Length: 330
DNA sequence: AAGGAATTCAACCGCCGCTCT
DNA sequence: AAGAGCGGCGGTTGAATTCCT
View 1: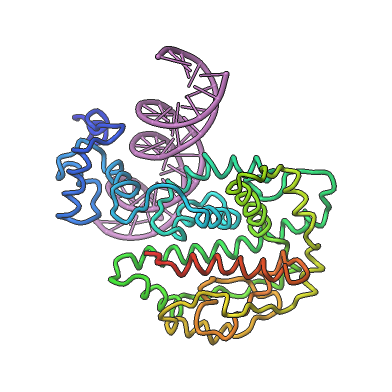
View 2: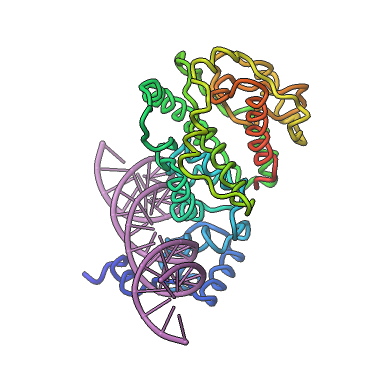
């Protein structure tokens, strides 16, 4: 018995930072032979690396469709929204941030966003304001409901991520994806009748976030303290009251950036001419198209603040999402 | 200017699930 | 059905860089 190939690999394989020469070899090989077969790649490409290392180097660094550099405010907000729904599922989150890798998002979260949220008085795990006196039991009851909602949203995003993966090789993946979603992606069965939904942490956090960012960008204003964060949350109406008082909401289309090729979404247009009470929020892309108005799923009104300012919040929220979805994803 | 602390991020590790034989 | 191979994922590490005193 000789040395097994795996132990031989362990002896010979190089580790650590990649050199320019190695990068060039890897790039040249992929250019010539395409992706896949990572195990064989190192020998064929003349690299003393394991296949896994090569794959990682490609997916996290060498791939041409990677955007590097500072995350925009929009991207930060998107990460927070998605993390609130999905938790540490970086690859699922990455499918919603064009040209960003899961590794990069994970690093950004761990080194910056998590700390910033903490400093703002928000628990980065639960996305709720950190424990404070006066936290009532209704909120803890709502936590279970939120978890339920998150599971549904999570399942949907997963399906979307799977599809995204499948459509990578299609020549025009964006249109293909839209078409596929509109025509063939199995829809989730409606969930069991949910109780009045709790406030999604993302909306709450985002508002705080926006406030804090404003102060970041306005030198004359001092940074908000965790106390001011809590003050904001306490300004919100109780969930139950909000939920019952606004059964149907629409956002005028003038506030929504229309998407081209909306015909690909006709299936959703038909389906989502209106929303039932307690309808689960689904893909924001459903909301795109040639609508005279856009119906907002009832589940999206968790944090509506009574009065016109509440409306503005929702419009801004959806505009943010739609803008990020409308921008080229692939 | 120096050196210690803190931060960043590329890369690694171990595990998991899927596919193929 | 079982096991090997492979790719993907999330957590973690540690070298490089930046910041602070």
